[in-house]
Length: 217
Image 1 (tube, rainbow, N blue to C red):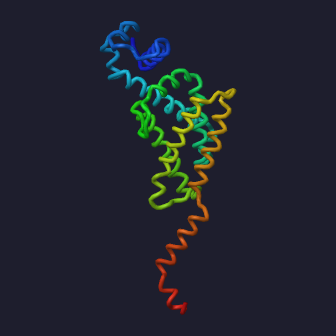
Image 2 (image 1 turned 180 degrees about the horizontal axis):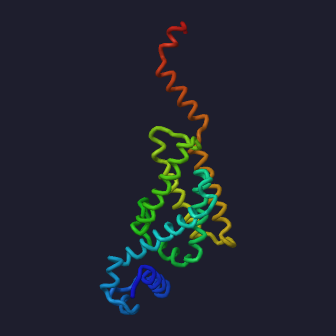
């Protein structure tokens, strides 16, 4: 009997063996001893299968890192690092599929449809840890800009994903280095800085502009 896992595994095996998607659901189902109806109980297309595989990587990563005893004590930065390290460690076992899937995506500035469910899961996680960071004052709550923090994290994720695809270092140690440097730089930008003090001082002067006249300057 077909399951989500069996369909995903059969699909991965097919595309890595043939270098392309199956010609039809009928052929794929017949080769894997299932009916078309069974396939469509779980997925509406092969694109949906790939979406499910990528989303599954994120879901499994989150389950594993949240199960760690130290998780609740982590800062937002540490939680982000934990997700990135965990995701790419998990992806190592499916590198051939990841390379195949990514390299066939159209080039452009928009997120490929195959990553849409993955992005939704990632942004939900990002919203969660960024909100925690702002509430704990680990991160700066900047008007207008705070809502863009998750976008910056997604851009960082996509960059590292592409970096990993082209990483030929032993054990992908260069990717680990890229994660550490990238996340730390990003979170440094999220934290309070002298620029925040400058903005607040400027706001104060605007709101209290009459002080200048009263002091005779």
